[in-house]
Length: 285
Image (cartoon, rainbow, N blue to C red):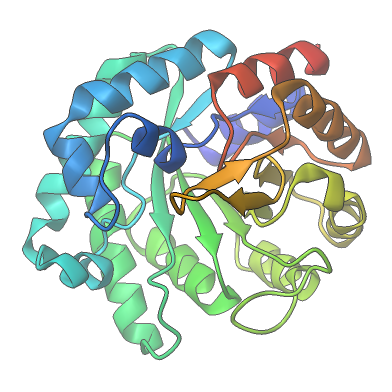
């Protein structure tokens, strides 16, 4: 997909992304603490079933599960030499699941570390993006980012190796502040200037707490705005598992409000399922 094709796609209608991956895979048996990219690579049928359900629910874009498959994060599991194998394999798994009926986004995320030098971030993301682009993703998504520096590294790395559209979403507090300092409003302006094709928020809180944040982002940028929140704020059950209380219909209702507030690209994060995306597709019609 070219950047122009991406702009035309978003201009045509509200673009519908997929919902959660990790929380659904854990329901299907993915253990805690494992490298999720390796687990999916070894158990592809679980992810493929989920992504087919997202496609059938109305998702136009699904995220390949390449989330933390960068050299820095994979080193936490002793898998830093598996960057190419995992990224290439995980893109193939998603493409086999949805065929050409959905766009497949190469997914990149935070390393979770504040002390990584910019050049090291740049090289790690450049390596991952090179593989993703060669594997045939349609676009890139930098998601669940905790600070603007990592997203800037992704944009610089992408520009160095490909011409794919890059969407960028950060995780915020309900007041718009970022976990690694600063706020989402200044961040999206910076990212637009650097060439991001869409900016916004994911994970964070539930959609009911993000109306003012979305309105303020919309006023700051001219590029498309993304919102991909959780199914409300979770409570932890007696087994230590997060339980999200917002149902699909309530979630979709709040998401419609966010679309009216200026969101051009929408989906769901933790706690959402294909049922949430199906309901969201209905209200967007």
